[in-house]
Amino acid sequence: MGVVVTRGGPETGVFNSGHVPVMLNETIDLLAIKPGGRYIDATFGGGGHSRAILDASAPDGTLLALDADPAAIERSSGLVRDFKERLTIVQANFARLADVAADHEFDQVNGILFDLGLSSFQFDQHERGFSMHADVRLDMRLDPDAEGPTAWEIVNEWPPEQIADVIYQFGEERRSRRVARVIADRRVESPISTNAELAEIVQAAVGGRRGARIHPATKTFQALRIAVNQELDVLRTGLVAARDLLAPGGRLAVISFHSLEDRIVKQFFQREARDCVCPPDFPVCNCDHKSSLRIITRRPVSPTDEEQRSNPRSRSARLRVAERI
Ligand SMILES: C[S@@+](CC[C@H](N)C(=O)[O-])C[C@H]1O[C@@H](n2cnc3c(N)ncnc32)[C@H](O)[C@@H]1O
Image (cartoon, rainbow, N blue to C red; front, side, top):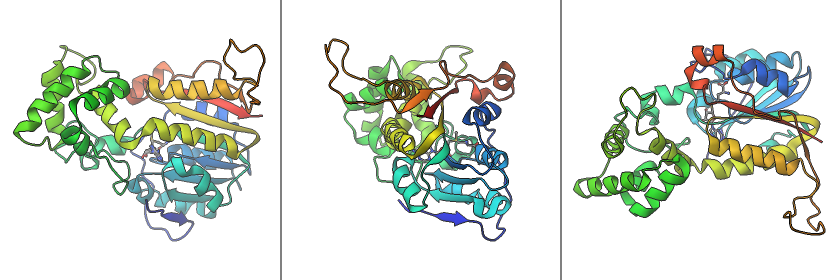
């Protein structure tokens, strides 16, 4: 994966966030941003949280921002223009957070944010290939140069049992076997090429409740995206790297959008908040584990009713925060 680094530099564009940052005030408050601090935004997206972190850490706080999607980096020029050398932005998957931070001499940082999933740009710009309604080739890689598999390969080449497992595990779709069977039947005729085609096939397989709030293919699309980008594995790797980069008292904030992600964050925080992680039936501790985090949010923070009304995409968001001991 290529790494694009933009730091300060010429005024090359206008900052334009078509993405509304979720739980912005809550995140900034709970990260306890302070002037002069060093921060990492592992998921730059439209830059809304990055901008707020830079504002709150003025006049001389610094931020290292990452995004796997080159299109997010291209949109960052306005922010780079506004904050100059206070902002370093890198195209990279946060699975590589430890290396990227080392390359830019970012360690002992005061706060790290992961705002998981996709930005509105990715959902709304059909050519980015995440919308169920798009007539684009099935792909779903955040970084178009990342190694496969693509969604096309999974849907057209994987055995139906494996497709069913993906849809069940990562989409929590009860009718995963039926969806996989219908996909397998249809691809015999000709490959399933586009998002819109797949959405229609899944809809035919699972039906749709009248007046249902979400499209019947939503769970299948979520599952494929998670599988293509190995989202749960990279989250586990990113969380460990983030914990190791924090200075004592530094805070780690994670906004997740579905229960699979939230469970990983919750279990990571719980484990890292304990001194002993031996199985409960062990009479004597032999794990040598030492707690590294203090949990700040006993329960996950949800968007206010008002935010959920004004930004329906925020509805499923959950924010958890922990502090490095
Ligand atoms: C919800 S958006 C972030 C929005 C951002 N906080 C804002 O205020 O505009 C998530 C972003 O994270 C990026 N992303 C998702 N998984 C990633 C990963 N493993 N590594 C790096 N970036 C990732 C996506 O490309 C997307 O741009």
